[in-house]
Image (tube, rainbow, N blue to C red; front, side):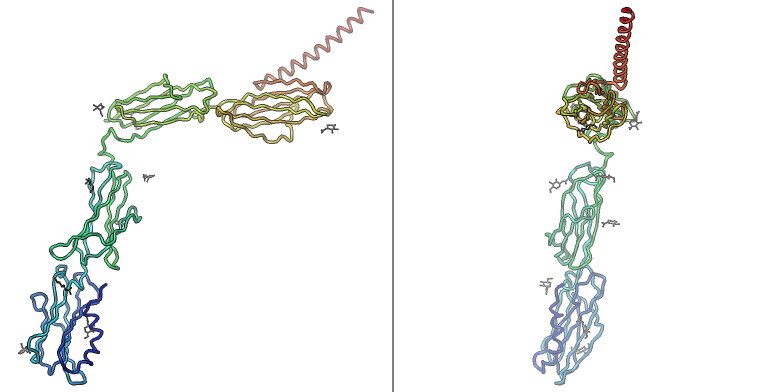
Length: 479
Ligand SMILES: *[C@@H]1O[C@H](CO)[C@@H](O)[C@H](O)[C@H]1NC(C)=O
Ligand SMILES: *[C@@H]1O[C@H](CO)[C@@H](O)[C@H](O)[C@H]1NC(C)=O
Ligand SMILES: *[C@@H]1O[C@H](CO)[C@@H](O)[C@H](O)[C@H]1NC(C)=O
Ligand SMILES: *[C@@H]1O[C@H](CO)[C@@H](O)[C@H](O)[C@H]1NC(C)=O
Ligand SMILES: *[C@@H]1O[C@H](CO)[C@@H](O)[C@H](O)[C@H]1NC(C)=O
Ligand SMILES: *[C@@H]1O[C@H](CO)[C@@H](O)[C@H](O)[C@H]1NC(C)=O
Ligand SMILES: *[C@@H]1O[C@H](CO)[C@@H](O)[C@H](O)[C@H]1NC(C)=O
Ligand SMILES: *[C@@H]1O[C@H](CO)[C@@H](O)[C@H](O)[C@H]1NC(C)=O
Ligand SMILES: *[C@@H]1O[C@H](CO)[C@@H](O)[C@H](O)[C@H]1NC(C)=O
């Protein structure tokens, strides 16, 4: 907001009127203190004096045309001198950037008329028209293409303004006093270019033009890549990769399936590799669906106990272009059941340590319980598992047993629950009679240990019975 020279003078006017007793007549011309947009009426004042009488004429000219005054008032000061003040209202138009207003005062005292001229550009603000264009434009914008965006700011006055560029309602750049070009009509125009990447979702770009403290003039454009115009060979294919819903044990095979659609030609090859070796048992089918092709490829992957850290690669090529390269970790499909055994330490005093070894299982979570003669054994601390170098886990649980306690044969069972499968258990028999001799019996299945136990017990009793029988027969024979 530049204060016009006229405005500064106008505040001195009363002083001037009082101060000038006689002497040289002067003339002042004042306009509005703020710039105004075209379409509005703005006032101008012209004051001249001192004169010896009231015989003065005031003429207003806008460029070459006379403009009627709206009010005219003669004044006198205390020295009896005359002054004239004249007012005019001018309706501004955009072309007034190069117009001027002139106040001319004629009086008998003057050899030649007094006049004062003011450029209307001093009081004018022309608001620009703003638009954004893109290159390339519209339907020919591809995904991830760099697009030139241009903000065109046309026909403004004065030349100074600031630009703010926005993306999705966030400021990305402020351009202070950008370079402008002058138009023949005296106004200014500018173009500001920046680049952005087109996305399928689209982004909203806005250009804000700020003149002085005026509210910004805003325009926006949404830059969106056109999916359907894309070259079909370069399209990113959506796909589905499926595996079994449940884990499988080593020794079995799982089926992995890749499915995709909208291939432009049938030249699609799917390759499956396990640990960098091609998997042979695959089936790939390509079938027409409308004017594109659907692809389905399935492969059988054999599982081994050491496959926790293994992976399968799925490579899809469309006419030699790699369109998918995906790593599938096999641990998500693998269940390795643990080997469970129980061992014991040699006793110190009355205590013997019995340890349950739960080895090489996957995934990590197991639930271990100790039983003594089929009853839950209290006081077991929760053991933590350790990971082996092959990715499987191992866990050990140790119990101290007081062997001096009274009782018959005591059977300790370590029962391991893994992955909602039937529990795996192992037993250890402690004999109360033969304090320090233990018979550890490892067993892989849930049923076997009981059978062995029964057989052992039966065997012992049969032997006892036989020895009695032998002794009896021997006696009977002797008698
Ligand atoms: C013009 O003069 C009148 C009084 O004479 C004053 O009220 C008005 O503010 C003046 N306008 C300008 C633009 O100086
Ligand atoms: C003022 O205008 C009137 C009418 O046009 C004219 O008669 C008179 O001479 C003019 N006065 C001066 C000082 O020019
Ligand atoms: C008025 O405009 C002219 C050209 O149109 C220029 O030469 C002159 O300096 C301007 N005067 C002011 C006071 O701005
Ligand atoms: C975008 O602008 C750059 C720099 O001015 C130019 O080299 C390129 O050709 C433009 N791109 C388009 C599509 O107009
Ligand atoms: C595109 O839009 C979708 C849904 O509005 C959104 O989930 C996704 O993240 C967007 N993608 C990008 C790249 O902005
Ligand atoms: C973008 O322009 C539209 C229509 O002109 C308008 O409704 C919307 O509010 C504008 N958005 C911004 C951020 O200015
Ligand atoms: C091809 O795949 C699409 C998307 O998965 C599916 O909608 C369409 O039914 C499939 N066409 C055939 C012939 O299988
Ligand atoms: C496939 O590739 C060959 C050799 O690069 C090329 O000649 C052919 O035009 C391609 N076909 C399609 C459909 O892209
Ligand atoms: C073992 O049990 C016996 C008999 O109840 C008891 O006297 C002894 O203190 C126990 N030993 C330990 C180490 O708990």
